Image (cartoon, rainbow, N blue to C red; front, side, top):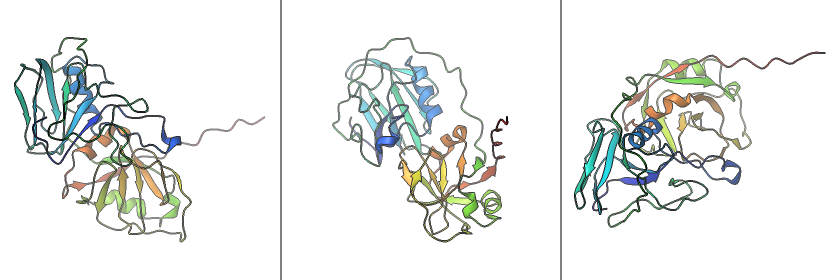
Length: 277
């Protein structure tokens, strides 16, 4: 690795199933972009890639290999990188995170079943720095054509109410879904911190810590919502007013500080029927 930007980490599909140990899931924030990069170079979906924040990456190949860059700095398909050649990922014109896949995958040792870097507890490989040499696995398939277009133009984040929406005044969800929020400068892989109309509580007091899920919209005492992303803590002590649909979370990976965010409320799933004798 010759140069890196603000943050370069190794990510795969995440460390699923470790929340009971207090370990976040981690994994690529823009999962569709990471999956596309892997598919283009012939990898399976579990292969590890590089997640590059705001470009600034320059790497050199020790041996010839197929590479693909997707996400914010999408280059449109797989490219052959000869031995000794350099790959540069510049600051993207829009978006925030780019993904670099190499045929064979980034073969750092897995930790708790995943090669992902968790930036909350720093489980997994350390952030990539200049001078880092990353091992690459054996390529198992030929590169593939660009057969899957990028997701449609981003839209409002779809939100399912609950589980603690009863902790807020009756019009809080309407306010959240009827207002434009701005991405705060302190957003990161843990959470997308938003600035806008404050969401007021209907209940006072403290909420006991409880499990958190990916996409949970937690509201601290400031009233400013936080969308939990891949490195979110397994538990939290503030009420969750809703949960963002999993298929929309990739948008959060590409939002820059100052960008606007809107929500749209989906109906709450019906309660399961209880059989009676």
